Length: 461
Image 1 (cartoon, one colour):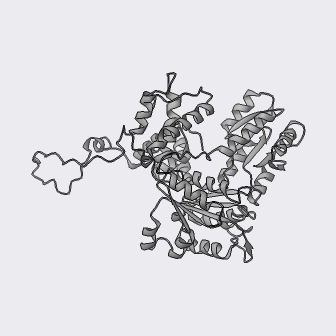
Image 2 (image 1 turned 60 degrees about the vertical axis):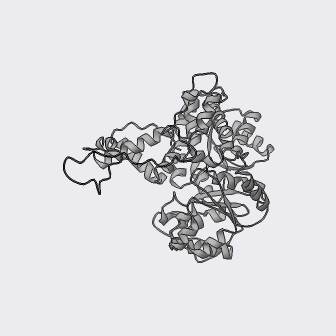
Image 3 (image 1 turned 30 degrees about the vertical axis):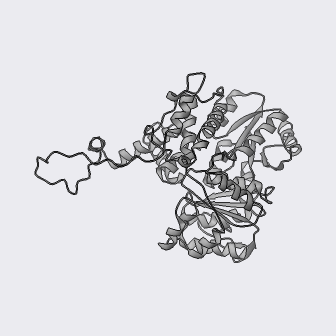
């Protein structure tokens, strides 16, 4: 665990650092948010940030988001200052810890951060060969390509491999190639020197250097532009990178894991992905089955997410009722585990019974069979009174189309984005994935709607 403490080391917050050291954490101290941001940009990675409420928490978190640095932030304050705690949470802190620090509370936070996103439930027979292969190749240095539909748990699997590898004590760094604009991704991966381009006001260490001695996850690598694919191939082959704006190569020791929700062989055939890079990445392939193909894990995953969000919302944990389990099993889960997680988050908030009842589980399109039903013949249509043939007409759902008549594209888009955000309980990351847009695009749209006076309620995550 790499802990960054921000604030003056006077009294209680320094005690938190000592407790962290005793628990085996590596601790770095920064006087303020600016110094902390500089350290993070220069490769001083952190798995958790603890920041004094006297610091400008909101500004610090906003800068982290702008720089695409993803690290949970915990606010600390003397005693149980309710006002300070609420303000810190509103500004984006994940949790508020009262000072003086309690050793068991600090340990619990470390455990929660370490386990967040790392729990892998894989009891279904369809997952057993995948896990067995992962266990076999994890201790090696082989590059691994994890494939599967969106939401099947590719990042969780990559973290599982890292924890089973010889690099488990090194950093695990993830970068989402689909969420970062093309013109910024090179800098994100390889870093840049001061003045390398407009806005490069300081040197920045890239993800390759940050993950030196550990594992680098390149999520959705298939979204990378072909010109950058060539530079990635060279970094893999030569085990060195060159920062943007520099001519000096830097040696890196990184174990690479890549993921894709596309068929990369088809992308290679279409000329969208380099064949030589594909072979470099696909030394070992782990193909994750869709959730509908591993029904034996649905109940356990549903209970896990129900417990997770009950705890997060200070709600008593509830066991899933038999009817709830049956409802979950009878759904197609096109969004896979990610959709199940969102569904259980909503369900635990809606539940009014001692057990989590089926009525609390709201499925977007109603229950779907695991296997698609056979296509039914289209009903015969009455002759068109206009005398115009039905050929060329595409009226699959006339009622839905009629409700859109007279509305602008911008209005329809706004309602779709806001409805999806509400479905995801305000989680921007999940909403962007469902909408098929980047976090940046979603954020810009939401800011636009707020400026127009639309009431937006979201978690900002």
